[in-house]
Image 1: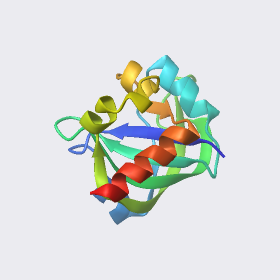
Image 2: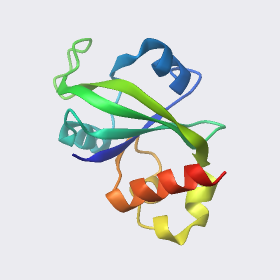
Image 3: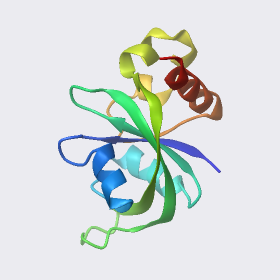
Length: 136
């Protein structure tokens, strides 16, 4: 099992939308590195849902339930999708400001490569984010 962070614009598709829907096909990723990461994911992998824009914070947990596979809405064979299902909300959101202020996260792709929308999460970072979410 692997861990991932999935960025979403809350005005387009938010954590609350995922909870309401229960599951969704995650598409729209076009960055080559983010697509490489997406293709490395597998059913059963855990996902942190991260709101971008003004929020910039981890808000909930999800699980990959299907894929990766070709994007059925696209004629571009390079594009891929996964299915995700909502898990639990974080007890308290963990902001990008908190993450950047903690030297523990200095090498995490979320900090170093901030434009990626699908980011691997080392287990040590995953555990630390969950720990931070319980503190507030």
